[in-house]
Amino acid sequence: QVQLVESGGGLVQSGGSLRLSCAVSGSIFGITAMGWYRQAPGKQRELVGRFTSGGTTNYADSVKGRFTISRDNAKNTVYLQMNSLKPEDTAVYYCNVYKWGTSYWGQGTQVTVSS
Image (cartoon, rainbow, N blue to C red; front, side, top):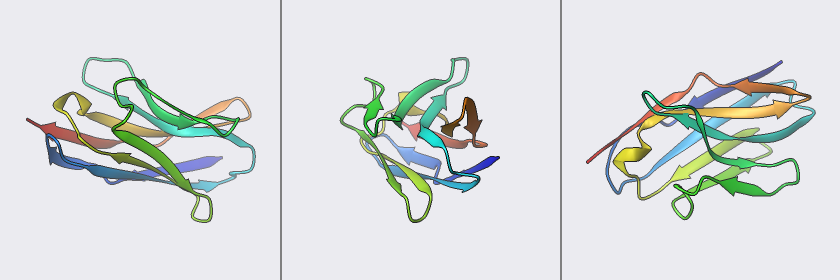
């Protein structure tokens, strides 16, 4: 089992920044991908950014150049730095890891961007 705990969400004005953290614990051996997704009210969950099994990163077009995913392997933590936030970035943000055919999710953290 893998446990994910997100933190760092909140309310920010348009143009502001936030950094989300995701602490990964449990049986982490075999994790091949990790990243962030988001879900806005009335919309489907969508990819924000992730590390792939090949070690590369990919991002949704809507966040390229504004968001950066990073990780600290010593702390088993994944980060999402969000800059130049827009009201349309408002959503619940979820951390995700993929291990041996199973996708694990955190509980989500709310990000609200006011105009």
